[in-house]
Image (cartoon, rainbow, N blue to C red; front, side, top):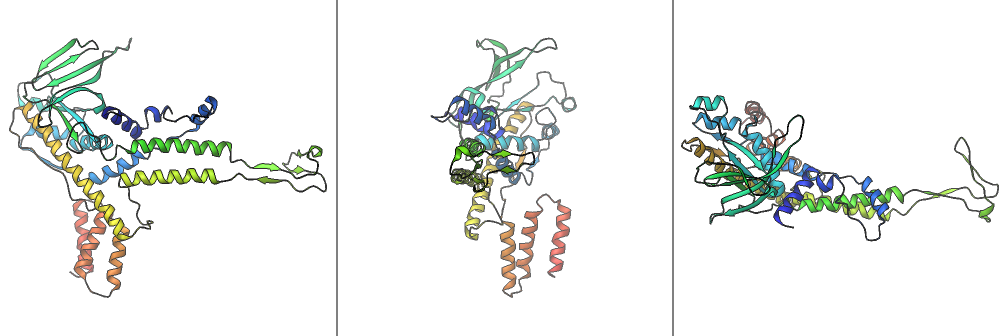
Length: 426
């Protein structure tokens, strides 16, 4: 697969769209008839585990919102509404991060309205300010990078909606941006519109999970596992539907002489001297094999996405600790990349506005995600040793409560900390 194909495929797995929606990702067996294949596609169901994994990861990532500051009121207005549709930076970046984690890459255009008021206050009131446009990486048609890995120019496919109430009119176009100008081109590459922004830098910025473009991320491979899961699940459902029905049998010396009658009260009459009817159940081995394979695929997705089961895990505390360290490391790396990316976005914003770049953006990079049940067990074990360690108990309780009540506000958390310290008489 090319990078564009991988991005598009991962996006379909995440959204349950494309071949996951129309069932075209259900693979046909060599010896499967067309009718049988068609019936299996009808009963296939895509259980979207990918979106759950990404949402869980994103929840950890934005458990505490980034800090943003600027002394410029126009920049602060962009913080509050960054995409010209009323979404704040917190909302925009949370949504952006999900797509970027799915693909390993994300792209944003920083654009500016063409009609500008003549003063800063009117700019704020009329929202005549830079705004962000999230671009799907798979829509990029051509680009060039400089020696530092930034876009010299970039072109991507888009549509222009000229529809009226009477008639739908949607035109396929290409949008082009470089360090000085922008263009809109039709399907024949004829220029429909063009203009100059004169920023001296291309206003299209990419995010790469590994800092490069093009790139794929650590979660992108889940799309292939999701497709395997989709197929294995459809095959198991097909077997359960067609091969797991019990068969009614009746032993008789002369089977041709046996007549079974099903009465109105669902009782079966059979001749004297004959053995009672019985059911033969099919061998459960095929279904069990599919169940084992589906569990293995689930485990693969869990492993890749740091979806660590807690409480019921049979793993040692050390093994779980290593997994949580890997999760915390992944979150820290991703947060640092997002921080650098967002800083690049506001560098363009300040160039558009002609103001000094005093923007400060800080993402949390210390996550300390742990297994709460394991932490409680450790605390209980320490206390059972008979030692009096009120300072240790206090800090451990603070960590446990902080992890359990991650969304609690600062004032209420302060009250809880005071209660802990008072109970331990610190």
